[in-house]
Length: 292
Image 1 (cartoon, one colour):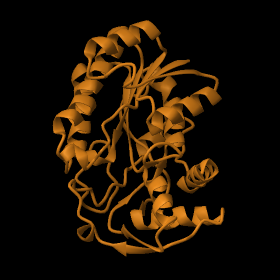
Image 2 (image 1 turned 90 degrees about the vertical axis):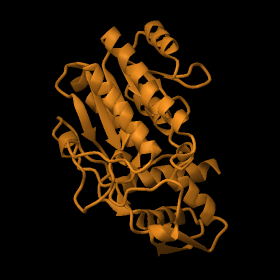
Image 3 (image 1 turned 90 degrees about the horizontal axis):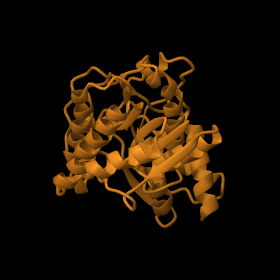
């Protein structure tokens, strides 16, 4: 396939480049330096010029806290940009996979969130991502799927794993929230999931919203401890990780306490499995340590 990915430079776009190329596909990534997805004409022109076999929207405004003071920017990318890509994909009849987030849910209760559960984002970021999902639904596309995922990490860009390694190099003790739970998910595993879904989206047998994440839900605190256990294999320092509550770590944007996604619908696809995030974590830590 020729895969056109919007969001060049982001974790998922770079992972799509890695995994798509490894699988023998041609992957073209477009980013802000070449076009803004808020520009409807530019998006349509790029799709017409590249004529891909699959379009993936990995572009997003992901600064969760900053979005509270920049709602226009968040919606311009996460809602309007998504609509522009989806509309052009529909017009060209090209299969389209959009990547969304667990933050579309309010995060109450204890059970994992299903695709058909009522949404209720707590902040601007989640609201803007939900608006993007709704924009796709309004278009009535025949060949598209939305993949909601959570707690994304990789050797690329800004993410929790990279932040923990940086802070742990200088501090003997860290305080990490222990009352928020979710599924850590390696960006490379998301890329693999997209590649698995692609033929089913193309033939229409996979359609609508799917949830995807790593096995074994955990807390940010336990995830941090896993990061340092992985880094210890390279002789990196292991700070004391003190569990704290969300109330002890206030942020501009509220986070859902329960971000665990029910991935049963994805697992019903032929060949689908949930990846062990510990394996993805070790690979990400290895790459980050090697890069210095």
